[in-house]
View 1 (cartoon, rainbow, N blue to C red):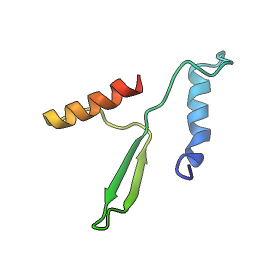
View 2: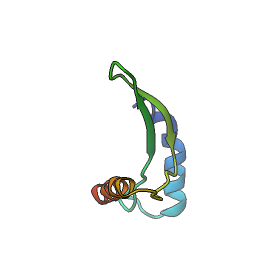
View 3: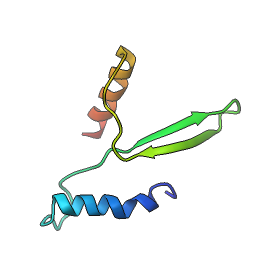
Length: 74
């Protein structure tokens, strides 16, 4: 939550600029990319949060992973 709270104002601004008359707040969503690293003790470290993550792919594994993220999001 501490990672998302600072991003909320800019995400809300982007939403309102795209959907100014949507009072129910239900017409779109945002996909954020979170880069993490796992150390030798299996502790997860957040490296960065991407507002516009890349959905380009270089390998079949990368394609399947990103396809699944988009499918599950929709």
